[in-house]
Every structure is written in structure tokens, then in C-alpha cells.
Length: 327
Figure 1: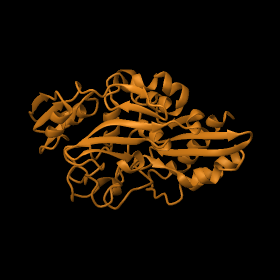
Figure 2: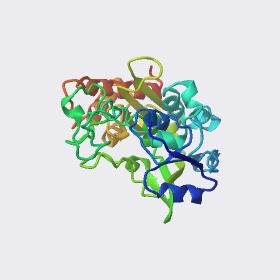
Figure 3: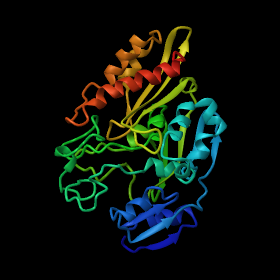
């Protein structure tokens, strides 16, 4: 591990000024950054502790749930507002990592967590465009069972690891960021960038900008929601495929639907075609399967991760069945 200076930000302005400097990293829970420091993947000159900043509350603002960037994953998952009005978010959070990690991990850190691609996390691997822009992508010709089938490019197919972000993407969350030029709002579905030709740029954050809050609009479709995660083991494993789904029903007719995928995309993957296909139909398995098929149109797999396409379809169907109360 490379040595670094450790400082504590006392105000948001102080943290923003530090974040604008070259080769600086912010730390709150540290559940990922510490790993990457130990692996020699992250090599900052300065690490800035932001845990004293005033972003640790969950608030009901009438039409919106306001989540501070420093709210711990455990606190958010069990918050009464979340369990009552947005169960898919609580389920997504509780499916991630372990209780010990969730007790430290924060909302902002979850948003900004980096891929678990084995080639990215191996500092001795010479070919990783995320770690060394222009060096190539070892996963394209290597072992890619855990990699993305949606949103990849010839430069990167690393999968986005977050469970929380999948639920937030499904239910129209907005990321609030603040920096040298003031505050701005970014829809979560746009906050994470596709890799394209620049996989090292993972979000729309500009130098000096910090995530301060996440806003989730209250909606009837979120009350009847569920999160399904398929993984190799029941705890502390990342998704092979996951799905967040919500339904608003009027009798036996779907008035609104929300669907998003995780574990298969280079960013949290909103499935708008699936949602539109469900409106006006009955909540039946046949209709869910038809909608799920639309979500994977355009998927591109390798010989190692081709199974993810069918697995993702089944995860969507199961999440929709749970949301509808038919399982």
C-alpha cells in the first residue's frame, strides 16, 4: 500500500475543495476504498474523511424521500418509510455484502462503488482500461463469467456491482451533487456512464463535486415492489443477475410498471421497453415473460456469461411475480 496523508473535512466546502485536487480520495465507511488501497489499485496522495458532514438523515419531504449521502445502508434498509413505501430498496440493500459491511457502508459510497472485475482489482494485470486507460481489456478475451451482457464496449465489459442502485434506477431516483459551481440534480439512470471509449470515467461527477443526497419520488408503483438477486451463495456474493420490479394494479390490470436489472449491465439497467409492454395487461406469468424478453434484446455475451441472458429474464419474471403477489 502506498503511503498517503489523512485529513478530516469539517465543512462541505472544505470537502469540495479537497475533492477538486489531484489524486485525492474521499472516505466515509471505507468498505471499498480500504480494499482497493490494500490491493494497490487505488494510490491516492490524500484521503479525506467526510463522516462529519451533515448528510446522515432520511426525510419525508411530502412527495419525495430524501436520503443523505452518509446514511448507512443498514439504517436505510430498515427505515420505516422504506419498508412501507419502497420495499424493493430495502430488499436490495439487505441482499448486499454482510451485516458488518452494511453497518458501515453509506448511500454515497454505494453509488460510487467500483467494479469487482478481477482484472481491474489485480494491480499486476497490465490490461485494464479502467485502471490504465488505453491498456486494453483483459476480460474481453479472458474469463468473463461475472461480466456484463448489456452496455459493454470494445474497451470494457466490467459489470456495475451495486444492488441499491438497481432499485433506485427502477423508481426514478435523482442524485443531488454539489460543487464549485453550485448544486445540480442528475437522474440516477444518467449518473453512471457507459464505458464507451473512456471506461475510467464512471460517473458524471466533475472535479470538486460531491454526492450530498438522493431523492426518490413517492409513487404508488413503488409500494408494490420487490428485488430478486441470483448469486453463487446466499451471503456476501455479487449478483449474477438481479431485478427490481414494481407494479401499480387496478383490479387485474397493470396501470404502471417499473423494471431494472443488475449484475448484467455496465451500469444499473432500466428496462423501459419492458415497463411499457406491461401497461394495460393482466399480471400473468405469460405477460411477465414477454416483458422480460424485451429487456435483453441487444444483449451481447461471451462464451462464459451467455447464461446470464436467460438468468436475467427469469429474475425479472420472479420479481414481477413477487410484486404482483402471485408467488
